[in-house]
Amino acid sequence: MPLSLPTVTLCAAASVNVAATIRALKTCLEKVNFAECLLFGTADIPNAGPNIRCFGEETFNSAAEYSDFLLLRLADFVNTPHCLIVQWDGFVLDASAWNPRFLDCDYIGAPWPQFSDGHDVTVRPFATPASINGQRP
Image 1 (cartoon, helix red, strand yellow):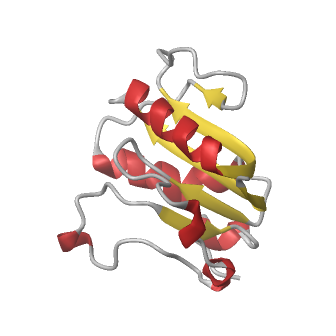
Image 2 (cartoon, helix red, strand yellow):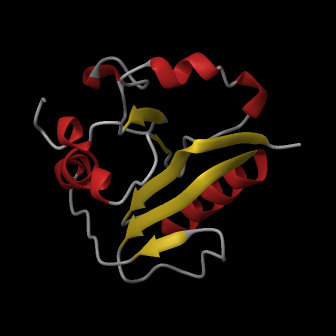
């Protein structure tokens, strides 16, 4: 039986490796029941299937544009208190490793940019979208 995370939205953003990103999202959806699944990318998103909501008007020409989208705009689309961000090479492999205390954290991901290749899985809270959009309450 899949893990149930009704307060978490599964998200991915990609302009390259889009087909692999869709496979990663589908793998996650086989293991976890999320509130929703969102994919952001270019207009050329192949058939993602009925469980993935696609937004094909985003283009990420650099890591900076990708990061800006995640930090400044993603919260506008997420309707749950938390978001799990995955990438084509970083996604849910073992749902049994989930710990409910993860949702108590402000951010779970690579601790230092110099040691991250940018391909990690992150959990982010959206209880206060203004805080994610570059503002602190």
